[in-house]
Image 1 (tube, one colour):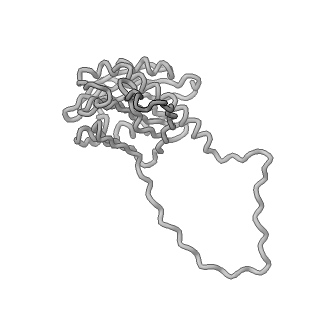
Image 2 (tube, helix red, strand yellow):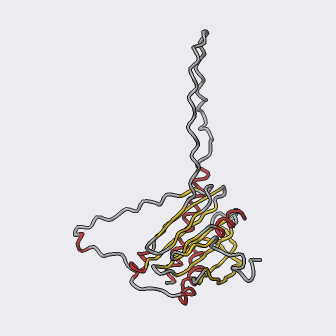
Image 3 (cartoon, one colour):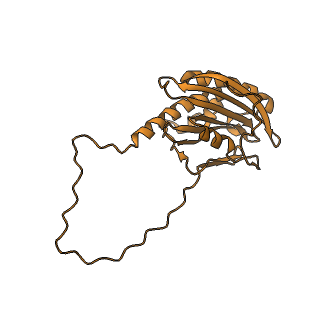
Length: 247
């Protein structure tokens, strides 16, 4: 269980750095030595005007969202967040497929959702551990063990400090939460607030994680609507989740 949480937070580091690189790569800089293509010369005799083609109606952006019926949750962010496509995983070719070992244990961890926004990019990652794959269930009393891997996982990728923990309930679900400040190792000029929220549902354990570069991103992460085992809540994190706050 501790390994699950630690592995989840280890993934957050590469996701954050990938989002930062992607944000820089989308700039509109022109390669040196390449002049702009000149516009074609206009004819002395103007051509007959063509009727204007109406522009298609703008399609409103869809909010990034995830819904997992196996574990039993859903979660969505505002439409100005951008989904990050999962990295393709190469599958080894088995000479005897019938002898291949099925997933079990920590191999059952699924990264179900990654989204980013802004520059420097804030990132949200959602991971889940289906009990049907894992081999046994967990209880609310196991949340402490899940949370114990947070510091270990963060320290592999981030320099974190001023962490605080809390517990709250949504309906009949006990929620564990931790918040800290810090920077990615090797990128100390960029500061973030890290927040992790975990709970145990009927079908599995799930953790929501963010590296928020600004208050609005942290607010979006916390106030996003969530469904837990069929119960819908207006926000993932209530305003009274922490007794104290980071210094």
